Length: 376
Image (cartoon, rainbow, N blue to C red):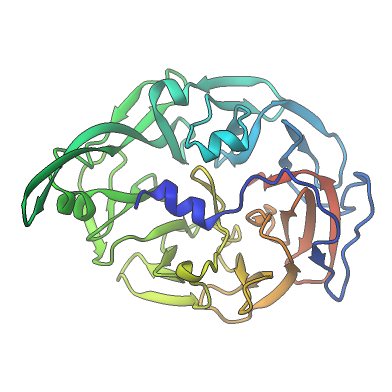
């Protein structure tokens, strides 16, 4: 199964429908007042979010809101916090039909547009932003022929072959990395084609295939296997690049880069039953849940009844777990940490909230969705 299909299961549909009263107020309460009065929190960085058909940028205390331009989330920040990217506007019908957004827009924090990448023209899907800020990890699709050996003979057909590539944000030059080539049978496709890929903090590529989890240089060379478990969904590296948050067989794991050992973080998620963890957002932008110092992880998990979504913060080994809030809807966004690691921002339906990481306070922040806190 292609990663786009997996992520479509993992994530909610666009946060465009505004419904009232669909989040349970925790004991310390949520300020559900109308209007956009800001959080009252004093925190570093800026928060980008989508409201209506536009992308906005605002200080965490609710001041200095600016409109960057027409666009659609999800939103991704460069590692230095000086640039961000988002999609040109597309409709939910485009998603249902499997259409790519036309363009990826890169802008700086004063709203000046830097460049646009023509995704549909280049047939690209964005996977991750390189730590140096100059290129994206992408996949490009080609038509390929497969051979299927059957009892009554051989069948052939055409399928989409996805090849990892990088694209320069300034020139739009696409460089294929050669990680998927010359597949001639269905068995080869499932064994050797990758299912997910991201950058590590040192700029190497981590990618998952049917026969294991691999790391290679940013040019696709010098690949080696970390573990021999395939089909892993990659959610993000810790800031020092030693621990990888992953989704394996319906369970949330931490994988140690040095020895390949797995630490179970949450075993209550089950894709076959529709129990999802909302870290990644279609198409491919992800919020890993790691706090800036990598001492905490924030994530959504479905309760045992399957009708409520709990936002948790825990230590990487699964201890010290606290529940921040409960939502009675699947229209939720990935939690995003403040640069100082004291707060998280997230959305439920079309309302954005900021919460202290110690569960001491939750406040309504703004109308909108896809909030992402800048890393600096």
